[in-house]
Image (cartoon, chains in turn red, orange):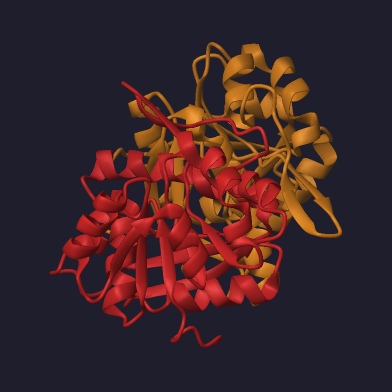
Length: 217
Length: 217
């Protein structure tokens, strides 16, 4: 297993539920966590909520400083944000966990993405970064809940760079209970993002915070 | 749980691996199973392999006779076959388990489907049937293996007709070890079909016959 213990983690969109939940778990595991936001003040407020030494800053500053950068922004602003951070993200592992979803009265559904998926969109924009897709199905509620010690979830990690996917699998496993499982190449990330719509359907039907486990591995 | 014990199960494409594996498990569970194929002879040969009272016939005869019809044909012939069976399938629960996938030297990938998914294509063709999507991720190897008593898998069942999805969930559960889990509306079936490409990637990386389990339900 790749040693990720010394790596600092930047989270763009770290003031949203998904980003904040991940930030909390990485900070609890001893990582230096940098929360990014369009608003430096909101980032600092979120970092204060999280504690464990997390700090907040503008997205560009966080992107430049962190060893690994997680992208947890709403899909609407995804492409424009990454276009603005090409220089800061050069050479880095960028972990995209964005789920392009729409919602109507029948629930959630997958939005079409010209590049195929949010992760492929990131890779198309960030040609000098090492883009990995992961953390799509984490439950923000469970990540934030102090009563939840272990999260019963396999994080599927997708990408075309083996060293990068190995690193992100190891990073996923710093969250107690989580396994990082290789889930295929980046071209197969659309369905992993879209699957979040099904998980939302499961959550509604069963009143749950559903996750996935992969059997036989 | 819906009582499915008296229902006969027809499997179109029942001579393929996925269809044959399902046929075997339903026959073992005591269901009358009708294997369908373009070739009546090949259907009868497959039924002979399966035993437990399974019978074989041409696809049209099986579609007309069975209470529930499972569609397990290759994607290439999917639409044309269903167009030819509209009358036979009227009023029935039709369970689509087709995975539209392509393969190249990098492995499997999802094929685009004009209607969104194979299941939605089935629903578009079979406007008088009750189309449900399910059984995409079953491992034919495990279903066929006499040493495998329990299959460690949640079968995701998708559809817009609650009674039909309830029935198919119950049907999934006649296979020992399997849970039938509601997985959303038919419009969210593309990613469930496409996810089979990721499962193939997992199988290659981990030398496994991977399945899914949904946690917290």
